[in-house]
Image (tube, rainbow, N blue to C red; front, side, top):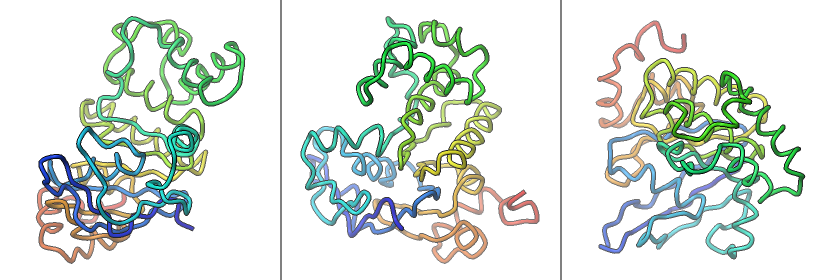
Length: 264
């Protein structure tokens, strides 16, 4: 069964530029779909539309986005609020920087949990601390009682990932979640997201310009260019047997994906 379906979706902005043009693909339950392509290809616009958070001036002017079989465009504000967090969660690029620097991590984390579920603060605190430990943050208690500016960029990003995963959403959307991290931390975050998928059964849609990350994580790969879906298929189909010339160009800059080390 598909948790997310895009059916002939088109999206424009105020300048009437069509950012997404007639895009269709599906995300099966429990699977990871990577959306790859150059800057401006419409990758981030697609997942923002999927959670109903298009930037100012953005408008879905064609097609349907279905979450769990329900049309997102037909949902009211209250229904969308209930879905966000427990149904769909999102990790923004550099999302750790969205943390309020004047409030401790624990205050923000627990407040988020209590917005979606009725629980005492003490339960929320323990739930948050356990999730941070799951993401291998050293000394979760220290992180909880720190201000964001006291944490490294990688630690803040992992806090944001923990917050997104805490309510065990059916679908996790991740917009370039590792782009601002060093290579070592990137590898850790990718593995942690894979572990969380295996543990919770959540489906994941990750936006990335890095075909290496896509090959490491994804069950399916969607290739975008100039707002259009150029290719969609399983990881093996897209990487080993690409059909579109643009996909072939993306793979050409990561030659090791085509050799014996693929899948290692």
